[in-house]
Length: 272
Image 1 (cartoon, rainbow, N blue to C red):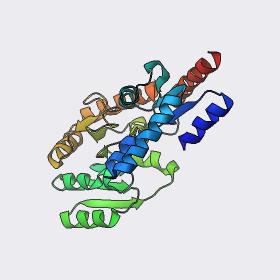
Image 2 (image 1 turned 180 degrees about the vertical axis):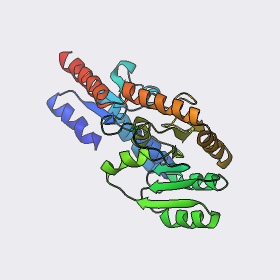
Image 3 (image 1 turned 45 degrees about the vertical axis):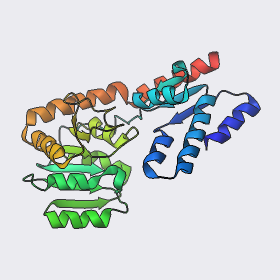
Image 4 (image 1 turned 60 degrees about the horizontal axis):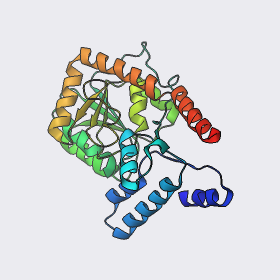
């Protein structure tokens, strides 16, 4: 839909800010083999970002790709991550996480790769998983969990207000996606003081600094299993990563930080 804003800029001479949480052309390239659809996505995305006075993206890697791919002036590209309400999504010292509780939140489709989590948990003793979300893979995932003897509770879709309490009851949050934009659910988990594990893929690796505010793993059963086992066995590591994750969110992904960045960007446009 950005082409309509491009036309409006040309017609009325008003500044144009293009904001994207992920690069549409990259997602289309992963979702289809159609050369025509890929070409259209690149063409429209390129038109939008080259026409914009400012381009706002949620991750530094996306900014670098836009600058390189579409030859956009770096001064016109700003990184503002997705924000989290840190007053709602916060740790609660009165809540004790359930031992062995692994949490996954996301659409049940191939991009999110939830089957990897179930496969990796198969030989981890004492683990029980809560899966929040729904999608076309649910029936297959239920069968996979049953066949492998993994305790999985499929909670379906939940109201957003219910997530903070669920995060706090988990010992570990896992996001095993094949790729991401700027995954807000990961930031929400970190805001709640939950130690996180994510696959080393675009989007997730922009948020998690390995062994600093979370753990990164390869997209393999062995690597994810090792990361989960290490966190579940090491309370000190869980505490250190949980505290660092919360500090990261407060510094980079709070509503206050996002508003300040957006205000500075708009003031810079209107004063020029």
